[in-house]
Image 1 (cartoon, rainbow, N blue to C red):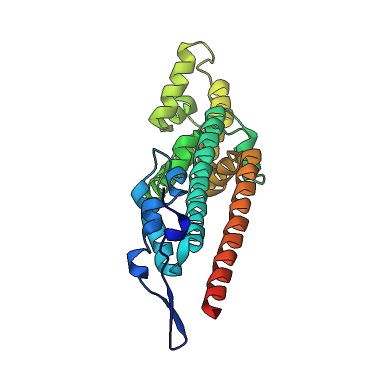
Image 2: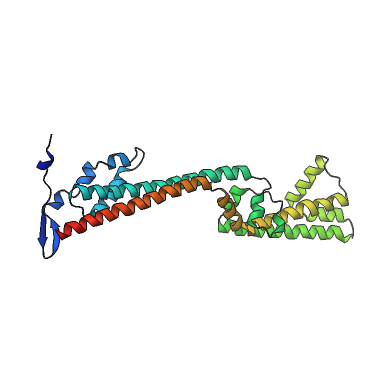
Length: 271
């Protein structure tokens, strides 16, 4: 067994008021090879080389002399590595919460949309496909908005034809509707839910088509507010608070360790 007294430590050499470590170059990366903490800080699924690079950067920055300073630098690296892990955990928790939140909200009328834009009456009964809405690009949103505007204009035109009372308004209004709307109407006729009459078509346009068109357009135009509301509701606050407390603990530990390292270096420089 090696006697502690037999371990050579670099000697301090004073030159022009500066402190240098004799033989420092030969030992300054020992912490990377023989660090006690690093063997346990890096988990099997994590990148040991990435941690080594971090520790090497800290050693280069602080240039520790002796086992104590090397230990403190290694401690700093471990704290920073744990903070990285906190961020990964935070992202994972948010993603899981969002998935659960979106699964519960998919295609159901929800207070989420109403809370996002409380002043928009068109969104009171909105049934939103959240995954589709929050993942659209700006170009896709612009195209969807143009399509929604055209669909609303055509449906409003069909409603005006129906309400004009001139000629065979039922056929003219039905012919004016977009193909998807006519198909929806025909499906309701086939299922016996409505009758092919003026009053039934009028109610269908007023209470189903126009509401759906206005709601669709409002969803697109308020896309950002709805997305932020969904993401906000998807964050599990109790879990985030626990992570935040742990991160605060790491910050304080980092500050204390850095302060100890700086103090040791100051004491060494005064010798």
